[in-house]
Image (cartoon, rainbow, N blue to C red; front, side):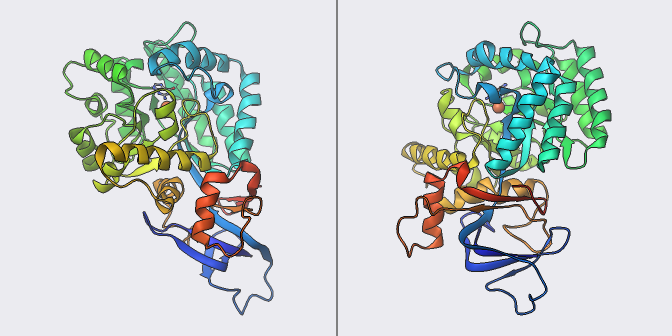
Length: 415
Ligand code: GUN
Ligand code: FE
């Protein structure tokens, strides 16, 4: 099969490839076999899907998102992190004990992710094993791939939202066993954040991550009060990251959201150990956490990708996340004097960077399964003769999920 249209992809940070009226050739498995500037001459027998003047772009990877918080998006955002957790997030997550409710909201979440062109995720569930399995089923059914974590929390939770250490271990074991039935959605160990897990649980999670070769996700240095709390809980650790490192969870492929207040030493530890920083610009502004030093981190060679952090972030749509990332980096420029994120850079971070976490190559690449969106910018492209780069910039600021006409995930058309 051949897809024809205006190809736009970001092979490297800051690099944009534009192929007007280009073609992507796919084999039956949805793997890209050729990227061409025009319709190949030997294409006669093949099905050609012609998207005309529309933009064929890379799909998005949301590398930090809380599934159970989706129904409370845009609520309580005048509170700082710890108050917001206690007053809004924890009571909402408690509702996921109800599996019928889980089915309803997770089906909707999966549909909305695909509608907005997000085809890969690294996601938090709640502490509930059954609801987490339902979430994984619904994501897989929608065609999404990636990692989902059953949350571990055996301290500092809330009434009805806390496990005993023994329960947390037993339920994580059960969950990991049940996860074997999934093919596209895999488990990631998820201590909610250091204040949520006892030393004993952290030790078990670290040991399990190593023994079973499982990735780990959590939160790092998001908010001042949180950081102070962690310092009091672990007086033996000079910095927040060491509370994960102490238990073997600071390793290649570990995903840490926020890192708003990570100083040079914490950042060096990320770089040295191959830990990923997930930039959640809207969430960081919404709950007044601060603005992360994204440019510094990129310059230092840390792996960075983007997250919506719904519901700290109010928007699931990764186009909004790109817009907010650019804007936040422009505000940060006043403080650091370092360059803000360009259009091409934000696009790289929302697509290629996240896809690479899952082993994909650069931009659209021969040998990769197709992850793409087809975006119709005719609603706001009132001028003719704009370059594809200009059209990308306008799309980042103006597009809505309804402008996404088609979505391809793992080589299959899913919208
Ligand atoms: N830290 C611990 N839990 C959470 C959460 O649910 N959202 C955010 N933004 N930070 C957290
Ligand atoms: Fe988060």
